[in-house]
Image 1 (tube, rainbow, N blue to C red):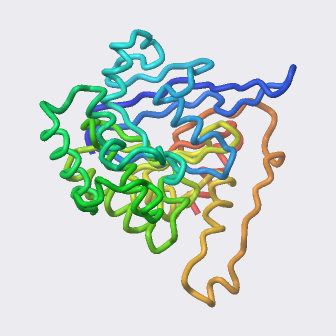
Image 2 (cartoon, rainbow, N blue to C red; image 1 turned 60 degrees about the vertical axis):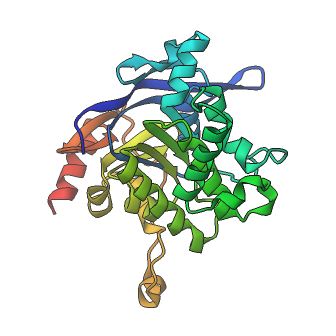
Length: 310
C-alpha cells in the first residue's frame, strides 16, 4: 500500500434539519485518510452515517463543516463548472441499488457512455461504441448487451453495469456505497471479486461502505467502524477482527454467523449499550497500538490497553 494520501477527511460534519428546531448529526466530526491504491472499508449499522459520509466526500452534499481533501485540494471549495467537471472525472460512485440507479428509459450503450459524452472522451461514434463494448467485457458482460434496457438484466448484471458506468471516465477513486447489499449472497462474492480484479488492473482506490463486516474484511486493507455519526475504531482489517477494542465493534463482530452448527448453537451475542461508558470527559480518538485507533476517554484507554495485554 502506498503512503501517498489520496483522500483526507478532516473534522467532517454533515447536519440535517429535522423539523423546525431539531437537527440530525448524521456525520459528526470524522477524521481519516485513504491512501492511494488501498481499499478503505467503512462499516456500521443502518443510520450510522456511513452513506452520508460517502455522498459528502463526492460532493453530492455540501458539508456542514470540515474539509475533504482530494490529492491535497479542498473538494468542498470547488465551485466553478470546470473545477467540478474535472473533479467528477477523478472520483466516481457505485450506488447501493442497481435497480433505481440506472435510467430505465436509456439503453445500456447510452447509460455507460453518459460520462464519456460529458467529458468528450470519444473521438467519434465508432470510438464511443468501442469504448462501451470494452467496458462491458471488462465487467463480465458482452457487447450484445449494449442495445438492451436495464429491466432486461438481473440484479448482479445491473450492478456490473453500474461499475462499467463508473469506470467509463477512468477515475482514480471510487466510492462503493453498499454495492452488494441488494444482491443475492451467491452474486455478492462475484461482484466483490470483480472489484478486486479491477483494482489490481487499473490501480484504483476504493472507499467500500457496507454493514457486512465479513465482506469488508475480505476486500478492505483498513476498516473504520462508525456509530451515530462518529468513527469509534479504525485499524488494519485483520487487526480489527483479531483485537477489536471498542464495545460497539465487539457487538458487530459477535453478530457474524459462521457455517459451524456447534459454534452457532453456543454463540454469544454481545449487545452494545451506548449509555454504559465513562462520562467524566469527552472521548478522543487515541492510538492504542500502531495504526489501531479507538474513540475513548483516558480512563477507558487504560482499560482497553489492559484488555489487549491479556
